Image (cartoon, rainbow, N blue to C red; front, side):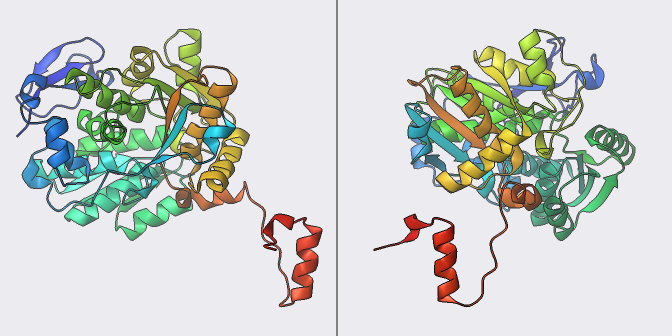
Length: 419
């Protein structure tokens, strides 16, 4: 059963009752991104802490009353969600915060948080009887859509910019997607996808323009709250590209707050790459977003024209949070440190959130008495070429113990001796 009341435009604030499926505001056109509103009073009758304790479904479908889909179409999907929340073993002491957690969404079926939105898109397509789902993507949304669609027997058409990483392209092709590689950046890929979707009538998985998809992304916040016994950390840190994921994080906590399941909404820290940071610049200068270059190797957050600016900005403003921007070198160092210190291998865009946390601690945005959750949005295996840029090639030795001992002594590997 759907508990949706209707849609509200993020620009003109017009409310539309849910008489039919809508993507954008009729008055504001494509700029009028919609937000789904729920009947929290009715939801509270069937969804609470006790019902969750009894629920054995360890996927996003455990939150079905807060999602815009019908249950009967959710039965055969990939198992998306309920990813681990890992308490830091060592970095919490190094950076001197009260508690530090990592929400590792790199263990989702196609190794990224985008599975949360893609599985919603595929289920909605089934509901509407649409056999083809399409989107533009820098890589993760594309591979995520292709994998989830393949599971449900749907066809996919994916538009990617020419810089899309090989690992993500490989996933796309393996999942059987029709891949359109656009000679240009994400802006051009998005533009062509929009024209094609309008022309062919495919189901639109572009998260910024489809209000259903942010509802999938918000489940990462629902899980964080539940995994922390409904006492979420003071800060939640997430990398930002289009603005959809950070908007979803806020929406998830907002839902729980309206249902009186949490007492506060955490402050949200949005992290952008300095080479592509329209949200950061607009927030710090208190102005509207302006198009920027996409000059970062963190491809998943290289979005020069964010398609969901209002929800992305409001997530930080309404939670009394902040934005920071980090360099590519800081992201590379964060990838290496996160993997070697906590055993979490993150792709560049995902490691950006940890780099942002480090900067926020240094700038005293995050304080020693704070508890922090860092969302890791994608696995490092999605982009091994970028990961290798942070590492040294191993030495090649002969099959000789003497040569190995000489190598170990020369490298000062005393800590490896177990004597």
